[in-house]
Amino acid sequence: MPQKTTEQPLLDLQNITKSYGPLDALKDVSFDVQRGEWVSIMGPSGSGKTTMMNIVGCMDRPSSGAVILDGRDISRESARSLTAIRRDTIGLVFQQFHLISYLTAVENVMVAQYYHSLPDEAEALEALERVGLSQRAKHLPAQLSGGEQQRVCIARALINRPQLILADEPTGNLDEANEELVIELLSELHQEGRTLIVVTHDPEVAREARRTIVLEHGRVHDIHTN
Image 1 (cartoon, rainbow, N blue to C red):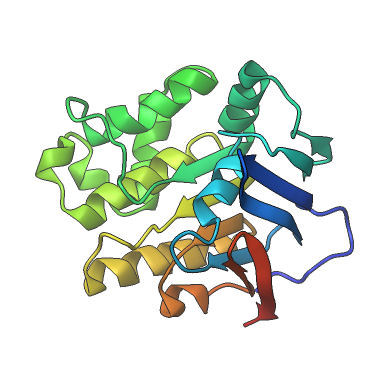
Image 2 (cartoon, rainbow, N blue to C red; image 1 turned 180 degrees about the horizontal axis):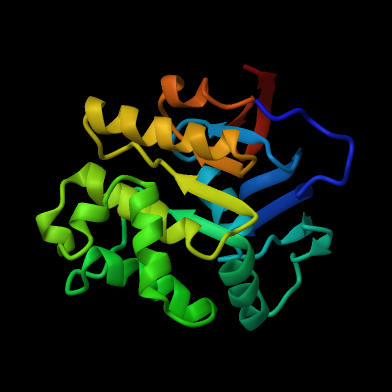
């Protein structure tokens, strides 16, 4: 497992609050994530996990506090700037996959390239080979199993070499066998030095991380080392 360093963390959340009228979805949340670290986020429904992921993933802004990503405070960036940061810095893996139904596996990976630079089918095929799907590259999502679709999502997240991989319940829709495959793949990425934040309800998945952060009622309830 990569050793923790004393350098500036890749991500530093400083007293983040997100309010919707009188409701605080997040309240004074602070934690950091070191480069090369794997952190799991746990908590019951309504604890603020999705809100926190949306803020870290540059899909929303906090009401107050600072989000320092790679040395840059992104908490007050414009929507256009957040889109560019998300495209260039973050690889997103969703529970619901969000693959385009009429595109093949390799074309779905190339979509991420299109928004980043230029599509390169050879690179996209290499990314699919990395997740064990080179033989399924020309298949549509409907022709793939849930586990295969999730691995396409991981290939898509990796294609632009992001600094941070953000995964929201990546095993939530998978059977036990495919869950093991995805956990193994995430573990390999971590061993290669990738930085991962994984939201999960599954203690088995959470234990794979170096640290687990538990949210309750919009606050950090516990942070422990695994």
